Image 1 (cartoon, rainbow, N blue to C red):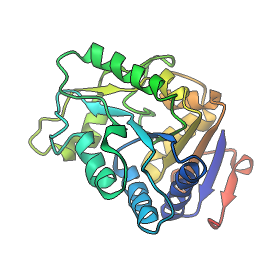
Image 2 (spheres, one colour; image 1 turned 60 degrees about the horizontal axis):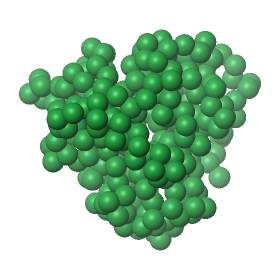
Image 3 (cartoon, one colour; image 1 turned 135 degrees about the vertical axis):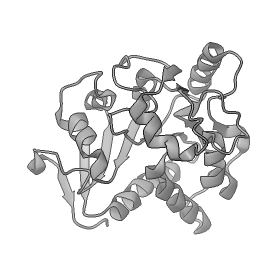
Length: 253
């Protein structure tokens, strides 16, 4: 695991976006695993800017998002499909047929999960998987005590996760379940790239990097990944103890 600590969240975002741009520049037909959530909003802004500047083309890129709320149709403005359209897909030259998310309003979630796993495999697997981290250590919607070998499936959302996302559902109809890539699915990506910023993520970050490998903190499985990069700002890194072991990046070059 490579841990990079930047002075500010802005510098951490710039570096994370740069790694994604470099992946696509090196391989135009990359398969990207994408994530949603507030941490990712500036990442997609940076990718839109890189596209406008002619630094990157998404024309041959294929994407798979980590998760989708169960019960929401792709047309629902609160769905992650709608979020990805608004944050990235509608602003770049990506082929809509190459953008994939679980179908939240599927009549058969088990079959949809199997279909999604098969689609990832048919695409050749994920080259770079972008990850955030929940305050309780979840990646995707793999809540604590998720199996570390799990595949795409339905997961119940914890009260903490539902509370953290409740502001997206002002009518108090926050979904209780989601379709999510499994931990095992995520671990098959050739490069896992996690971004965490802000003091609210510090405990989860410390458990991920320095804690025991445990289903109680699903993100800790990244300790076992063959190529995991964790990009932090100083506040998200605030509970780490082994500062001397990590790259303290004063300036993103």
